[in-house]
Length: 354
Image (cartoon, rainbow, N blue to C red; front, side, top):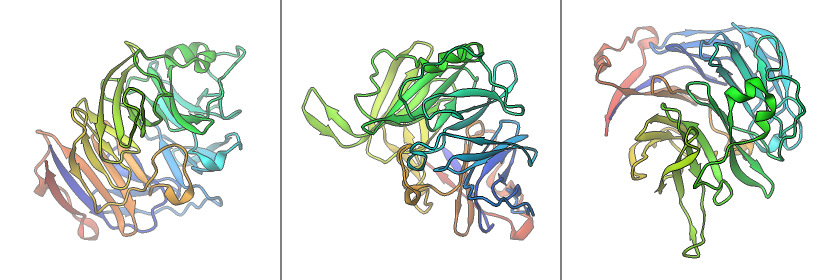
């Protein structure tokens, strides 16, 4: 497994999203950062404390929001479409629940909690039209957060929490929910997996649609011993079953699965973990990617702006001196010395093999 590293000098990054082969800082008004080191600055300024952004797969739509706040703006090609809100209840304790995805019919959909912390809604991103009908809703007492959608748009995962507080997980069938929104009140069950045995602190989908989850420290009832480490587990939404799990000694946090055998984990610093034995395959200890371990967090633990590109197996992390981009090389990737490095002296780049 081989990786290329780019270092791009750009000051004052406030958010990062991938749009094709460029990075965009939507909170800074849409500043464009290209991998060749060139910058297209924006003169748009938002008079609010937005500190994060997400973008649609096509890049036309973006949402800027406050991670531990209640307010967001929906943008279309940089223009404001509408303002969105979430429930104020404990909003300063956990990450804003929000996701943009393309449905299996090609519609761009916003998933968030505009009415209550426990009630997910699906909306047409441009018009705000509620999808899934108007049937009566009876959501459970669950604080939704860290929403993730499977690559095929079939499943929605919420790595949120419940009172004690306890980090836990809920997974929903989006096809059913787009027909009847009350399906978002009924998370699916997985054979062999109890989300309350150990805290589920993060989740994201593998390329094949299975769900990779991080289980935090817990208690082994069979040995009556504390479990100090995290574990990685794989859930299959189609089979509704736990299919694999492995302990890992490295702190995990936010995930970006690379393939069926490995994932990037971002707590403390980015590292690649094996899904076969939990070992660390690669690490970038010089990159500070924050100490957020779950949806429940504080401002001092929030990570710097990070952009994940699952499809191209690359990520970008902002730091005091610019942006670092790490991408996995494939057999068809161009050799390192073919990287364009023209503007601003070009980015620094290097490779790491593991």
